[in-house]
Image 1: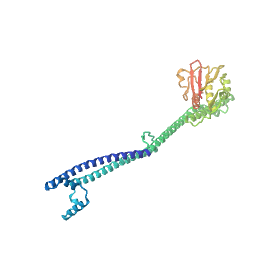
Image 2: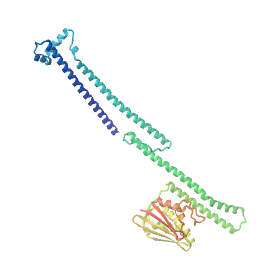
Image 3: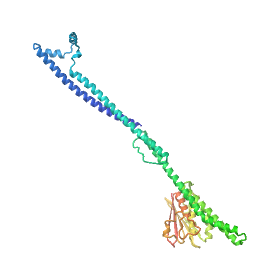
Image 4: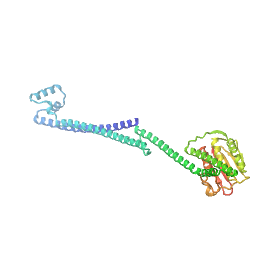
Length: 405
């Protein structure tokens, strides 16, 4: 606002200065013209008196014409009145012309100045009205959820400041709309994934229950097999639903990591205790080594879930009597965990897809649904981490998890 007033004041001052200069120049020109005309008329009068009265001395005539004598002036006016005239009846034409021209120049100057001011303020009002109309249309678009970011505001007046604020609001609304769209898309995807992945265990469970219901005389051994199969399907569905829901929460950003500083051994101990029975059943040894005193600032619950999914994947793809090694490296910039197995490895065609949701490699078990590694990647990246994989078919696999300090 202050800059706009200053700009207007400078413009008005410049226009006034210009018009004043023109006015002064015109008056000087008129004055010079008047002086020249008056000199000519005085010369003409002096010549006429000298011609009519040659007996008069020239110096006397010039002295009489140029002197300022109030008594002589009063006598002259009395003589004019005796003949029915006044002094105004003998004003020279140059004097009248000068007066008329002076009035005309003054009127033209004032008219031109008024026109300049009128045009300026009309232009300013038109521009402001146009900008206000544009802002109204812009707000109406925002109300219709049209987030058009093409808004120009290069000055610093009130409307430009308002435009800048509207631009910020537009950016915020557009980001919120985009996040909302992604959240809806992720929710729809999660629901579709859950529905699709539940079909197989639900079908198996339904078959087992139908067999148990249709054959009351079923042998005990067969009945127990069906019950064990049903129990496994329920566990699979429970784990599947839990993992998918957690994955959907990470996608939508609804989970906030509860970070705290602790030694990496605290997380790895939790992982080991959760997988100890599974490793024993598969006859796999889990060996944890390295700098276990390394301090990290992580969410222990979710990172234990992520590492458990990775080590579980290694156990499932390792031959009996083998070792899954977990080693820790620590530096000033990061803490790195390397998880190695001695299994069949990952084919080069599958290597770049193993973190994709529901992607199953060629060596995956029938019960695998392909979301464990995808979930682990989401959790690790949510805690300022990074995961990579190196593998050659038939030579085992190494997962590299890096947590940046």
